[in-house]
Length: 459
Image 1 (tube, rainbow, N blue to C red):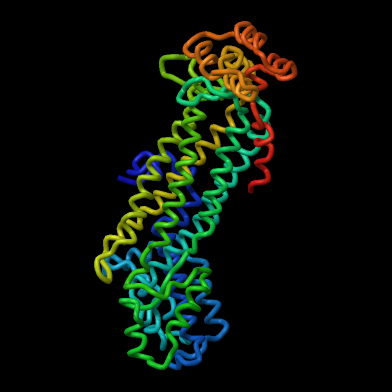
Image 2: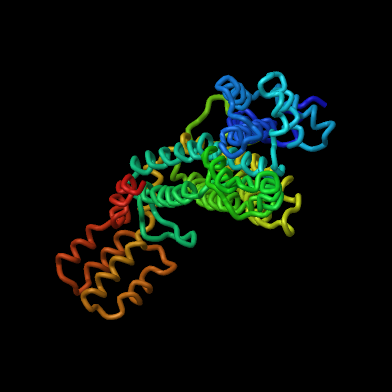
């Protein structure tokens, strides 16, 4: 069966494939093979440039340019050539080595030195650096830009609704009012903190041989400072050098990235559920899309599908990310192969993140506050003013203020008239009584508006 959007096993490569083109280029097997070429070339060039590695002479400018173009211009068609070699080798990294030797063998100046491709390397030297480059590129080019768009969308809506009063619903019950903008600012503040933590993670790698001790390297060239060369190569790729490893880089870095993304996703999942609830309450109206159908049988429906899709895919993303974080740092003795197959799902985890965030962005673009509905809900909840009334009563020594308000309000329908009659008979200073009498549920918002507007300071 030919692979199409309709025959793909994963929805990431089927139904949602068009939304994930950038990640596919980075995290697919072709992307992984391309990064392996980049790492192999970097190691070969570093050996040639090292004055103490005399077996491989310095490369001419034309040869360096040729090698750089092999890495930079690596194509999907060339990845297919590598896969064809793998059918014989049954080893993916060895297939990369053989392909690279074939290409370099076309230049007479490089033909004598083909055996210095993959010199003293174990496959994991190449793989860990390749995955590190993929993770770095996926974060910088795809995931963080999406989080930036979420940030802007949330901030714009928070500022636009900074002063829009809204009834809070602690435990699902009416509670002290807030503003819609302040609730959005809460989400944004959490998101920004987690983004900062994600950006602080060092994307690390190693290139130090079969068990991390440069055994083969030192057997061949005992006087060369291999750790220094290793560090140079890793850092030349824009990564942080890890000097202490077994055969594998221990993947603590991948666990850190996964956990950071889980926390980001948890924040956005929490928001998705709240946004869904606010749509259900009528606090948000959804913009209509011409031709769209909300239900196959109920024509009136406009469903909050973007927040629902976001919530569902965040769950899938976190399931994968949590397994990656728990599994990858654990390896039997100096190496087992369980990490290899699991790492191949990194792209899927990133894909579900991107899919979810994109859905939430679409959901944000489709909602607008329903001011009349928000006002009506507030106007039917005068009982929330029991809090400021009893607090002022406490201030002025009125006996049993909480108990008196509890008797008046708990489980009972309280309206403006009954509450104001209660306030009018209080033995408190006139100024405070008048302030309480002028208060409405919609004006009892504390500093919510100021806090919503101040979110621009907490970048």
